[in-house]
Length: 320
Image (cartoon, one colour):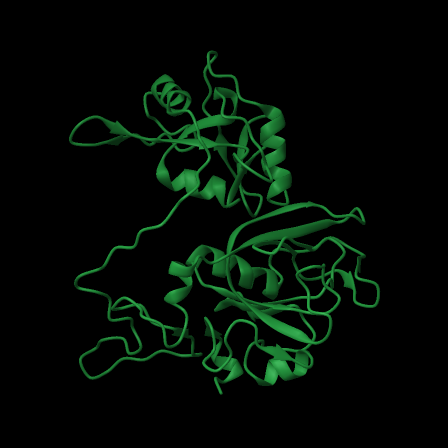
């Protein structure tokens, strides 16, 4: 049995999709989850390898192939109601963020109190591997700030790499994380992945939001490809490079507009920092680091109006 402290990621040998357990304790001792009470297994240092979905929070939504999962903390366990704001730095919330940022799969256990038709009538059932594809803050049903995590079921091609006994491409391994690393006599870090000298290819179907490249290009050209946050302009061998960053994300659940008022010209670093909520913008266009330290003012132009409403949404979305 995999040790619970090792935080084994992926499908456990001997526990295929559809495996059932009389209760959370049985699932825990089988190695699927590291606890029998909290919904999230893991911590911010290693990631989340499993969630239990049993309507422990009133804001949870189960749609089968995708889930809106409520973060941990500030919850009355006897009623499932929120009694205070949640904190993204709670170790279990940080675990899901880590899994999102590092592409680690999350096992999903469904319990009998969950939503029909997806929940079992009794006991718990392992329902496969999901990935965290986004997280954000919003007011919950009880009026307090909650953190929501959107999880999507892995496609068959994605799940193969994390399923014991299935064919996997060379260099792709089941991840079993230990608490320490070391080096061998050559100075090489032990336990490091071997990689792949000849990486293979996989085919699949990808559904993307249709966005206007003309809008993004127009904004970037207005600013001469210079980042509106840090002023950096990347000069390549041919031309310059910058990125069009949407303040309010496109697509569900944010449904931001693909218009120039919702797009900034940013360098790659600041684009990632904005998307991940590591920086935010006040209504007077001051840029702040996530810890509240001011970083300067957003560069603007009279012919590039910026939506203050979408800036406010970005702050709310990231809990500021």
